[in-house]
Length: 219
Image (cartoon, rainbow, N blue to C red; front, side, top):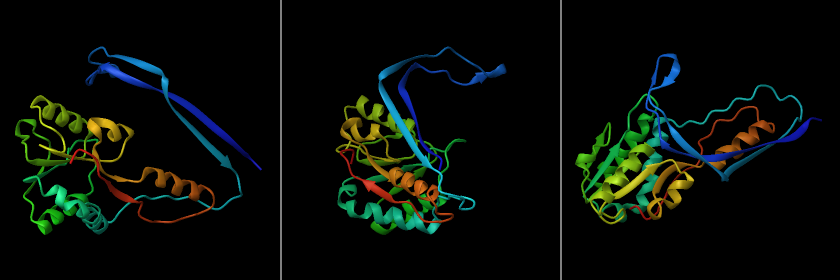
């Protein structure tokens, strides 16, 4: 029986100067500068064991539109009193060639705001010149998240007091950034466990992954 473990260690890398775009020959438009943190690493190990042929393995992580609409309201409704302290709810779709947003997420946001009667706005891109105290922002893009935090700091506003911030998708950074950023996120750990169960013998299964709201200081 074939079995074993594959491990890899990857250090963190912080870009001080990033290149923006490329020119002919796939060369960067400008020089970049970064440094590697050799003592700050991510260690990953995968154990495998061949247990026989089980046919093709197929995996699909997806929600129907109705699931997105329903889950948005279900996950956030328990925090309605916290959200109501803001006068306006802004959802930035952060549209770009690299950003996919299920239509059900937008529909779920609209339905939630209509049901609880909160004034809302859906924008294709966050306009920093229109950021206002008394508003709560739901952001898909992490770049927009950082830009919003910088804008809030420039006015000496406090996240969770003057401006509310909710981000999509949990990351370790969001646990500690500005005392913690509230997130709507799938459970990536559970997704990995589900994938492992497929590899261990499940030939096909289609099921929604856990979707949750994590409340932190940013609202």
